Image (cartoon, rainbow, N blue to C red):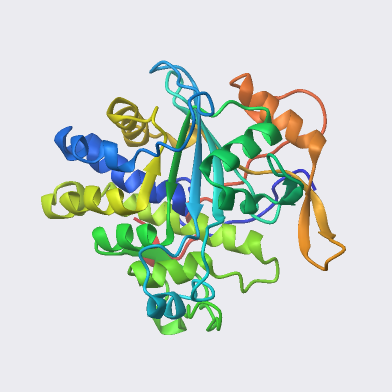
Length: 356
């Protein structure tokens, strides 16, 4: 199917993903608290391995594309923490893209268009054969960026990545996040996540529990169900970040840059002015100007070695990313197939205890 037809039962004013929210935690704090917080960290988070020209700078104020990556790197986690958090086999080296998003932002109109790629999407990897798109990151940020550029035809103007430990530490830095859930979550052997009926509807997540929640794939639709949970969590996370309890608490704000230097990386074009501009864009966010999509797929495919992957819908992708390149909504692009953004539920669908 080329259209996104998933339902997202949560109280969010808008829909985000954990990697974007992790980076947004830092950016919003910087935007609201002062230049000096990032003066000491800019060099520490910029990745010098990305060659000039792979990420192309744009003038401030022009529409731009940011590639946002959630890495499954175990860096920063002890062997015990990896086992406890369901972060995969202990001793695994390298990294893959656990979450991969293109965010197209038009500062003049305030419109934000986001496209998330399922990690099992079967595509041509830059400089190599076809494979799951998340594999590209193991060859470094440059290979991933070039793979995405070849797939979409889009220029990438900014790049930002946060790892597993960074996500956990960012959630803890704001003293956890409360998430509205309508159903309990049975115990998942792989990640250790469990939410009992007694905890509903407003459930508190510290960093460890949040990581278990967003990494669990124990759903009938696997990775797509996991994307749904990531979207739910990010809406609640940004609510927490923009609350007075965070923005008016210097102790919380001061924790964020330290977490960033250890767990967040950006390209050399993404300096203090660009970070502050993105922070300002997030602070003035208008949900009516936001659209979220999942990269179009045709369906599952079994490879000769038995692996299950997802086939991209090339025709729908060409239309979607062509529209983004022209700075128009994919939903407004002419011709077939018709592209629809992920629906945002009305607050009335949520339990009364979760409405604010």
